[in-house]
Length: 328
Image (cartoon, rainbow, N blue to C red; front, side, top):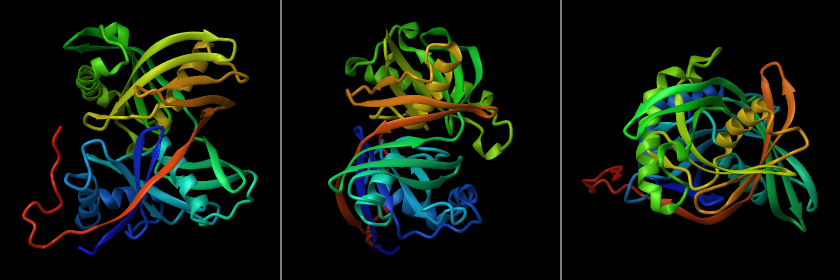
């Protein structure tokens, strides 16, 4: 395997590792995701970058690939320790920031400009705001978000609870943390991961995409504290436990879209309001519903990303650990 050079960012505390040197065949980004899942050569790079000793069990990243057509600036195949996701909001924010900071997408020094990114679930538009040539924030508009099912009973080690399932580029089950005897703080962290993982696998078969089976399956569980409603909108804190037990340090971008669909459906979030969505580490995304369509609501999620470093990773052919290992 050739050396792999990466650029690392974090968005609200959640890592995102950007790779531009890996070719993933396919006629669309959605097809390229399928290819990556079945290609030993491509997946070996994912494993190299996400596994220890070069990564960790909560690492996240993506392969930058061509967009589906000339309307996109580029595309991305998202990955994590267990495989490949259909959407990633924090990654979208990081990629848009990276694209502007590296000059891949040329924008004015001041004002807001759009970066168009094709992801496996569709096309997203990230509006990058700059002040004096420095990126200050990114607000991305996601694919339509919608409610799939409400009040789905699920049996857990902590008793039966009700979950609301919604889509924001990926399917999530939302469960009030207090219904499980938990709250969103570091003291409950291990318990939150365990129960989030349990709920995800119990409800995975319920999350069936109506048009594209490649997008089916429950991506994660959103465990949340409801902190009430203010004049500007609801305030909530959450932990998204996705894949097989990964914990999102950020408020979760696609998960925020899924939460916005639920709150709008409940009548708690008007078009002129915003959700203050906090993470378990105290970072915040702001989420809004900006339009209603027959396919679902159009959401906008705002956050910031920062570069944390660059690296070149090597696989020594004498290394018996190969592409690494994961401890959870």
